[in-house]
Image 1 (cartoon, rainbow, N blue to C red):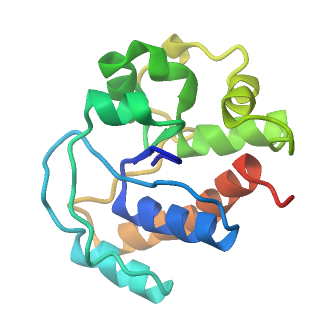
Image 2: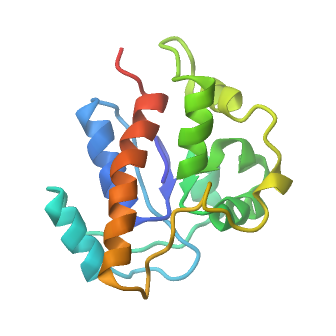
Amino acid sequence: MVCTGNICRSPMVEAMLRHELDARQVSAIVTSAGTVSAGQPASDEVLELLKARGLDGAAHRSAVLDRVAITDADLVIGMAREHVRAVSMEVPGAFARTFTLKELVRRGTQAGPRREDEALADWLARVGVDREPRRLLGSSPDDDVADPVGRRFKVFKRMAVELDDLVPAAVALAYPPG
């Protein structure tokens, strides 16, 4: 998930993020990219859950994460630590602006919302103070949103409920009301 030249690993997060940013009248490019395949539509489960939230993901097609998208992004949000690692390996300088969604919300809450006169990059630097790549090795329920692909619908529903809280929180921290 990315803002203003951005990247997102999840079509659900992409749609939710775009909705939240639009509601705050934030002009941002939000795109979704992954590490597996391109051209695939969102799953039926994701489409159903988006529809239940008044969002439409029917036009979504998967894209493969690439160097240009990462380099152009102001913020890259992954659903799991493995996504942060993949981005950082592709473009090592991107680590400072690449977070898991949970990590961004947790650290952003601790650092406080972006100030009105603060650039996004400066807020991300504040959010990332003392952050080290080695601390993002492995997986962790503290940082990772569970990947529901190939699992039962109830797992998709649990993920959606989690995202219902995380996405608005991330947007409120990065783009607080002015």
